[in-house]
Length: 255
Image (cartoon, rainbow, N blue to C red; front, side, top):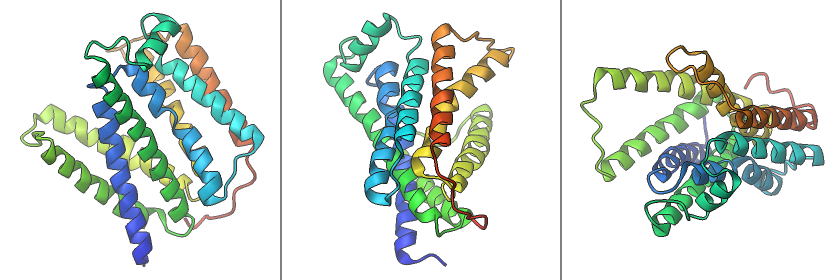
């Protein structure tokens, strides 16, 4: 049985997860993909810093180096196709190349940063609770709170939830079963065994998996460019470096 404090934290984690999904996706209406990707990929750095202060799980020097390398690699992957190269990236992040005006771009940048902060807090709370709470009680509460929050946001912003075409419903179901139920639950399970920054660091490999799928699926068949390959190698190298710098995790096999 979860205590009142644990119920509160697990529910709060779900609210933060919903806010992460909303703010990051909403940021793309106002700012460039370059700015959104750059800001939201700050998650591992934020988590590593707060972990040291709140959870007393300080990354080693090698782990910090791995975090930085992986974040740089994720930026290279995410920004590889931005027009104008490095100059285009800097201009986009500063709001200078957006067609909607610098004010809208700044608001979009803020939303992307909110997406990074809320995701970081979600992983940190998960790490705090998962060391003493089983994965299924935790995710049941967190996902339930996330669902309610997402519905509330949709209603508050005037989004139409129903009816939806059958094709879209199938896509939503696939997203719920795959990335959410399997992906997020797997990461929440890992939070019972590994520091939050290590678990979150592995999410930077998502673009690598997406790139491989895009190259293999006949309907897409996108060949990755040099920037994507180099960035992917940096992400993998950073994750491996951080993992090798970690102490042996405690045994929480029952979690």
